[in-house]
Image 1 (tube, one colour):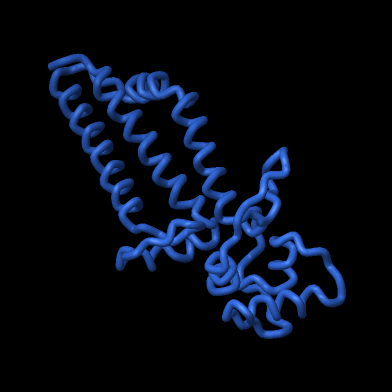
Image 2 (cartoon, helix red, strand yellow; image 1 turned 30 degrees about the horizontal axis):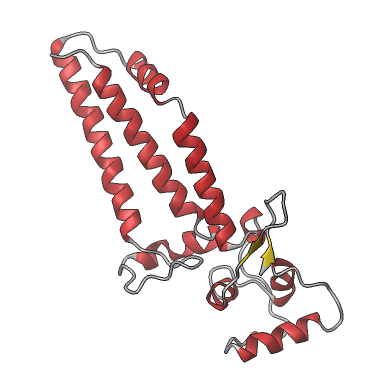
Length: 198
């Protein structure tokens, strides 16, 4: 159980052995010092040795003096569960407050279609864009990426293609991609519905 970095109240998050193993392996390859910081272990002369011993009891071996491979970002400090909650909260705010109707009307204003043929082409283009967003969104969801406590029994064979992106953002990246694809789909659908009937 570890205190989160983004919560106002000291909420505890569960860090599994699988998450620690993912953080220690490629692409992130964090070192023991950084792992100690993430797990909120105080820095003492024995912290590294104690952590290494604890990891060994769980079957995880870490070389001494190992260096972190990936660039340190804001995501490095986040736990997987915390990243997923951040994505969920963004999703809630987007679904409640993103002005879909305004954006759809603005989209139609920017490329006004006045003739019957132009309106039909515009509607077809918007419907096509909406279908592409839906297709990409369902493709991302079907990957069943291992994050936090979501360990799929049968990950998609294509999940490896998104592994680095998912690992470096701790699940936030793919979740937010799906969120924005669904938001764009709603905008395209609304814009299509606003066009005059032909």
